Length: 237
Ligand SMILES: O=P(O)(O)O[C@H]1O[C@H](CO)[C@@H](O)[C@H]1O
Ligand SMILES: O=c1cc[nH]c(=O)[nH]1
Image (cartoon, rainbow, N blue to C red; front, side, top):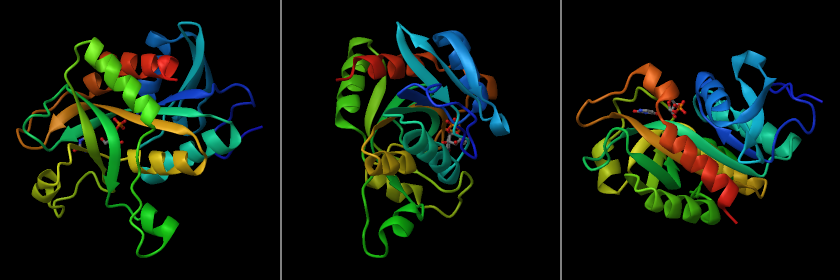
């Protein structure tokens, strides 16, 4: 079998999948965190690998950038390949003083300016995409045990990376933590397919201080987030 965007045979993708946006981050995770990782997808260079972590079969699939791209991979993974647990491992821009570059953000819920809510539910319904509580609870427990600097709360999935028009002060006032571009679609589709999803992010840049990480660090430097995602995936009940 194959889908329009994934060339794997049935059974080649694990029921647990980590989802970075960047295909080279997927490759890095497969090569450095999984054992015996095998490439199952290179359609559009959106790499997907399956290997094992502490004896548990886990896949890592790049999703590309933005909710249209995330929706393609999330739909095909859950609907066609039977994936049940999905953890996004992404980068994010902080909009709060206390959420600092290289901190971890665990996305409890994901607000958005995307039309995916309206085009799914119609006018007048403002659906709230939320994480799976079991994954959320386990990830927070593990972050605490590991002594990580982490934040838990409402993240914002924006439709545009470059958006001078968006009122970030208003988002901050209502306790939004940071900006990224995929989690609302992931949470909404996981609910549709009765699957579990969580977004774990590393702050790659700061919209108040202007501090940034390099593209190499975004690709390879966020090991604590990856370990937290892997441990959450295998330990969550
Ligand atoms: O690093 P990834 O996982 O791609 O995530 C963030 O980085 C991209 C923008 O640079 C968007 O996809 C955003 O969500
Ligand atoms: O989507 C993103 C990711 C990182 N930084 C941002 O400002 N936005």
